[in-house]
View 1 (tube, each protein chain N blue to C red):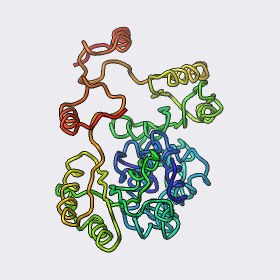
View 2: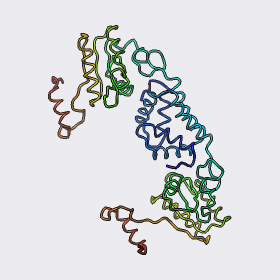
View 3: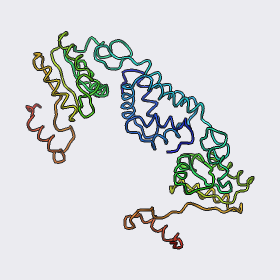
View 4: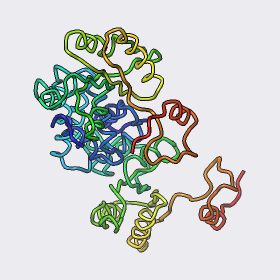
Length: 201
Length: 201
């Protein structure tokens, strides 16, 4: 692409460096911005500068927080003996929205992915082990995606934790609520049958 | 969505204000940025602040330009008597890439769209009329999208220009190069037959 101005080229390159945004979409977005007023675009740019300079992480669970402890870790009503291990803050937010979980979290900050060169030392595994060794933890719940990377991470963590004596569980895998059985894929259906649960009213 | 930090909330809101980016994608992009180094994210934000503060437009065709006249308008080899009317700079860039056009451009900055409340006064129609009245223009070529808005704008401009005595043309509509006729939609095929061209080797 031949850009008429380096300013446009630069903004397009920055936007298209984000995952899922190509150069054509980026140019469309930049032209959209040029139609907005100056203050709005300055606010746009400034929000990212503020973000990266002022962001803080919870010292306990590593989620994003404006205080030393996040809202969950700082809440005396939450069960600190139960730790739910998640990939990132998006999963934590999704679980919080269900209002079904009363324990705390541990944000790994990624999943083990040999294909992408991400090993156990690149995510917060040691921090989890330390927490389990030094604090009174009763149960660890794995809430990782059912992907190759999620399963690899599950297995690695299980191997590291299995002799610690604490309870290890994983979120249930099965038929999603509302799904029709004839359209469910075979692997999910097979897992749902072999992991059948006692019927409860 | 309950955000753990206002900084994140703000960045997500800014990104999701762009067309085609929802709040979930925006959050994914913001978390992606938080994994990058500080300088890279500052550069990202700054590129938009620089863009909006330093952007310049060609005083003749209204395309984006770092100089008073853009590269096309400032080029003595380009035919200033032929003006190609386009919606925005993206179309101009696409036509420039074909290297088939030697005239100059007029960027409307939008299309007439009563549904969105965009009338002829919201785009650069008067600037085009002025140019035609005061300069030695021989031909105007409409290169607008084949959408409701494009056709409305084509028709409006034609009505305004038809008594000016200059040649008015529109880019050819027909079968795209490489298209198979049996899969071409009926309207395009019908247009292609009624606007058939003399055969040339």
